[in-house]
Length: 330
Image (tube, rainbow, N blue to C red; front, side):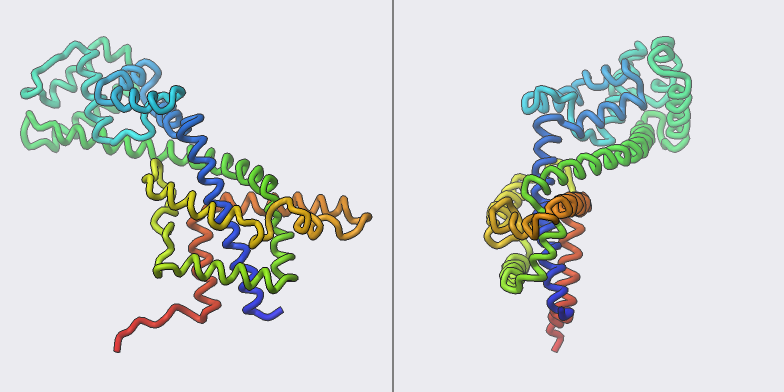
C-alpha cells in the first residue's frame, strides 16, 4: 500500500476518533452538569478539605455564594452549589464569614486589615478553624498589611487570599482531571461497544475498501475546509459551561456525520458485523477477542480528547497535501 493511501487510512481513523470524542464529551457533559454535577461536588469537597466542614457550610450559606447555589439547585436538585467560584468572590466571602463569626463588626467604610487580624485571634474563630489554618490566615494578613499603603486598604488582603485559593484549586483540579479521565475512559468503552467502533476492524476495512477510504477522505476534506474554518475549532477546548452555540454546533456535527453509518465502518449492521466476526467458524472466538481489543483501543483513543485528534488530523492532512497553501506575499 502506498504512503498516500496509508495516510488516508490514518486520517479516516483519526476523524472517527474525533467524532467519537465529541460524542462522549457530550455524554460526559450531560452527566457532569445535569445528573451528578461532578464539578460542583469536586469544588465543594476541595473547599471542605481546605476550610473544614463547618466553615465550608458557612461559606456556602453566605449571600455572595448562596445566590449561585440556589440557581444551580433550580437547574439540578442534586447540586451542592456552583461549579466555579471566582477567587475574588471567595476572598470577600471568607473575610466576611470570619468577621461575622468572630463578632468583630467594623463599619464597611472603616474596615482594616487589623480588624481581620483581630477577628482571627478571637475565640470563636479559634474553634472554627484548626491551628494551621489560623496561622496561614494570620501570615497572609500580616503580609498584606505590610504591602498596604494605607491602613484602610484591604485590596492586598483580598489578593493574598485569592492567590492562596487559586493555588489550592490548582491542586484540586489535578485530582478532578484524573477522575474525569477515568470516567471518560469508561464512557468511551461503552460508546465503542454500543456503536461497534472497533479500531482494528475500522483500520482493516479502510485498508481493504478503497471506495470507503475515498468517500471518507472526501467527507473529511469537505468538513474541515468549509468556509476555510472548521466550525467547531473554537469549541474543542475543554471548558466548563460551554456556550449554547458550541453545544448546538457539536450536536449538528454529530447528527450530520457520526450517525450516518453508511459512510463509516461503524455500527452493528450485517455487513459490518460479517466483516468483523464471520471470517471462519474456527476463528469466531479469536475474532471476538480481537473485537474486544479493538473496542479497548478505541476507548483509549477517545480519552485523548477531541482537541488532540483535531490537531493531529490537521497535521496529517497537511502532510498528505504536502503542506499548507503558501501565503500570498507577492
